[in-house]
Length: 299
Image (tube, rainbow, N blue to C red; front, side, top):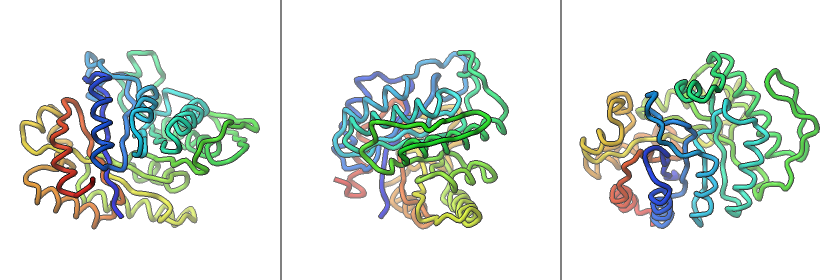
């Protein structure tokens, strides 16, 4: 069964607006709500700094809703130690009654690292850090005791107590890099997520993930595959949400008539999407979500 979610960007929006939107999404019958992890707005511009912190908002999301799974897509390995992330998401799982999920990624927006003096190493190093982080987080969330010796992170008979409500709290890996990211997902992920891709590209990436699963001896059915897509019923909405990056994300944005959106979702499902998330940026239009929910009879 295909699940539907909403991924809520944290830039250029107030806490009250987010809380109201989360409550309405929960009421509409969506299965998932997630937040992103940025310190600046996700545009790469040095003066675009209006953005809320993600662990705090992930917690607020869990407290504001009652039924959806509450995720993060995705926490940057460069911002927090994996043990801090594991402890945080464990607390969120306890607060939500077992509805938390955690996503991990290598990070990409160098401008926010530079602004705050956070090290932004080469992509190869960031991928190495992501792999070690995923191993540590998986151990801390899924096992009673974890030891790990890596170049970047070390755990010595580490315990994460109290334990999460979920015995196997879901861990997601975000990104479409075919050589490293998808191999890390094959080894450590319970879910894999990629944004703004056409169904054809998504299907290709999923096939690469499955090949990595075969290489590491993992059953690919253990990994939920999700795509984040935009929702813009009109070109005006497209420009309001995505502006200068509209053409870049357009292959992964739903629009047109209701029947066209339904058909496009069918294409993603046919390509292997177990979950489709509507990735929204402010200004949010709750009416757009209501129209989508009605089209798929989510309530």
